[in-house]
Every structure is written in C-alpha cells, then in structure tokens.
Image (cartoon, rainbow, N blue to C red; front, side, top):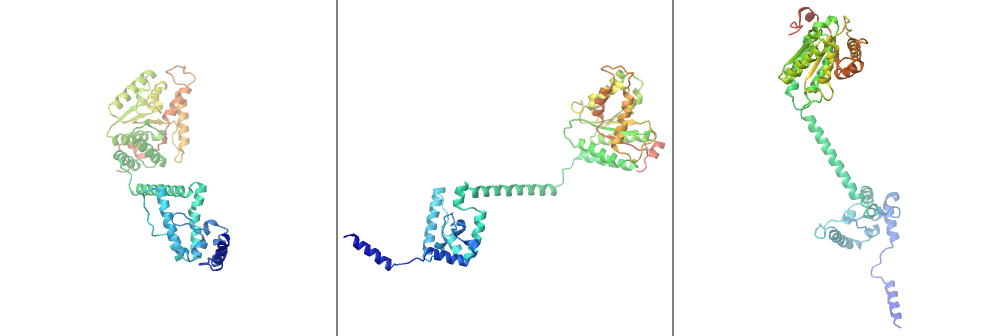
Length: 393
C-alpha cells in the first residue's frame, strides 16, 4: 500500500523533470563536430577529453558544454584547491581565483583541445603521473638541472674567453730574449724556434717541474762556432728569465781524463753551480766526453729522480759530416745523433763493468737525454768572426 504513492511520484517526476540534462552522447557529438576528429575525440584520448584543472582534477568535456556546470566548476575547483593544499602542506595557502575552466570557456573549443594536447604531451596528467611514478616532477627537475649546467658552462666559457690569461713575467722575459735570437741566427730550421720555444716555455711555466728540460743541439763541421754560440745564448735566455746564470762545461777539457776522474769533475761542477743558484748548463762537445763519464747524467737527467728538476741542460753534439741538409726532418736528425753517439761510446773492446759504458747503459742514457734533438745550421758571419758578430742588431 505504501509503494503505490512512491511509484506515482517517480512517474510524475519523470514526466515533468525540473531540469533535463541533454544526453551525454549528444554533447560529445557536438564537441566532436566542432573539432577535428583526430585531435579531440574523447573516446580516443582520455587525457584530451578530460582536461585537468589547475591542480590536476579532471573535468569532462560534456560538463564543460553543460550550461549548469558554469556554477559548479568554480566550486569544485575551490574544493580541489583546498584539498590539494591541505594534502601537500597542511598549512600553506594558494590563490583560488584562477582556474582552467574560465580559460577553457574564453578560448574556442578547438584551440583549447589542441593546446591541451600539447600540454598533455609535455606534462603528463595526474593519472599518468600516478602510473609512471611522477614523471612530470622528475622531468622538470632534470630539465632545470640541464639548463643550469648549460648556463654555468656558457657563462664560464664566455668569461674565460673575455679575460686574458694571467701574465707570467718569467715566461715573458724568456720569450723576449729567445725571439731576438731569430734575427741573430738566420737560416735556421723553423722547428728550432718553434719546438725550442715551446719546450722551454712549458718548463718555465710549470710551478714544480718533475724533471729538468734537456735539449740536444747538433751541427755539422761547418757550423761548429754557430753551434757553440747559439747553445750558449739559448741557455742564457732561459737562466736570465729566472735572474740566474749559466754554467758551461767543455768536453775538450776533460776528453783526456780517465772516465772516473772526468765524471767526478763534472759532478762537482754541476752540483756546486746548481746549488749556488745557476739554472742552466751547457755541455759543449758532448761526444768528446769519456764514455764512462757520461753515466753521471743518469743523476742529472733522470725522468723522475733527477737531483735538480728546475734547471735546463743543453748538450751539443758536433757530427763528423761537413754539412747538414737544409731541409732535414727532426726524426732523421735524432737518428743520426743517436747512431753517432752509440758508435762513439760503445765498443766491443771496452770491458763490461759497473763504471763502463755498454749497450744497455747507452740505451738508458739516450732515453734520458733525448727529450728534444734540434739541428743548427751555420751562420757565415759567426763562423768567420766569432760569436760576438751578429747579422742584425
């Protein structure tokens, strides 16, 4: 008996509804007809059909098209704002005046859909974030870090290019003296100036060298005076930059001595000079030294355990041939000097002992002194008049 009136009320309500909402399919069909099917079809892309609000809450396109939703969307957005703020911070507050529904209504539906697709592609939706574990936040963090690294790299490079390298007075003084030698000794191999300058400049520019700078300068018989003069002035350019002096040892002075005596004499002279502040040494006519005496250069030219590392040693070798070709390669020069010294210092008649030169010891010595081998060509004015005569002043 009580069910009858209730059923009648339901039927009367169904016949006279207060407000009848249009069917969902009809609205979706209207929206689809106003936009390209491939870009805004709600059945194909749920992320586009349900654009999120300011904090990721989804609003169906059918609700956007419904006139009654205009009053509901701000209320739902405010509720979502309060819920989001309370969930994340518990105490922080956020503005509630702006929401995406107003922007969606102000823009044409088709433009809004296309914009929404781009935003969805760049920033995944809340539902996708839940499935993927927060790719949106991590993507932003990675992008921010990448931009930060790029800015730092770009700024540091531009600053480094704009600011000149710090000047080293010692290197500048050396280059000033060394560059003058190119005018005083014309006709030399360009590699003499380029490689020699670079090698000595690098050593001077090192605050704590790990080994001495060692150069072998070689010439033929016709360039003997030029070899002596140029080697001395290169050494003087190096030591003068350090406000020091150069010690010189002539192989002709010790060539007649026994190996042990010659070795002790050279060791004493080099050690006392370097301890007194000398920063360069020239060993003239290295090929005339007694073979066993050359073993002293294990002590001064070792790669790691040289007793003096912040010095330069220049060794001169006068070859037996009369002339060096003008166009000569550095590997050929190095091979010629090596073969010449090998023949000079090793002999099958020399007995093998700890203080005698042999093939193994010569190999070790050569590896220590052959850092850079450069050729010297004769300057006629110097060969005729001596080292004080220069072609240019």
